[in-house]
Image (cartoon, rainbow, N blue to C red; front, side, top):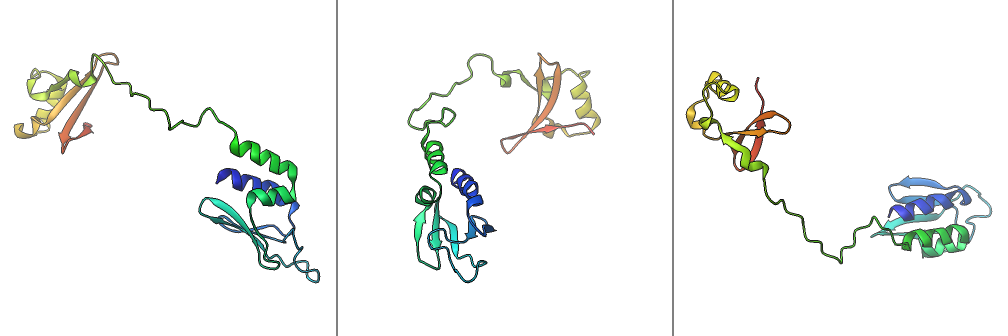
Length: 170
């Protein structure tokens, strides 16, 4: 949809009375019939979105076409650019036809370094924090300590309804 809108806006400079009326709705004078010859402000040609396509419809002459044929009629250079961009093979687009096996972590898991707060020494800072907050021991069994030895960080987590939540001291 982005490419279609881009090329419609590129060709808009060649369309008389071109206006954006809403999301995916554009109005201008019909390039096929020229709309009214008496009144130059009448614009009865519309581009609108239908499904994933842009459709052109003139409410004066009844002409209806898709964006591709419209671009071919109005400006062949922009039409050629549109075709090249629409159908070119991009390397960054994922190929959904090929299944790639996911890479699973092997060896040391960060979850193996988790320790229960109840198993820590009494002079440990996390254990003191829990005790100073007067948290009952029935709740301290659900607290875990995550030690990150490479960064030297200590984080206290609580498991509740199978969701890990980081707790911060007040």
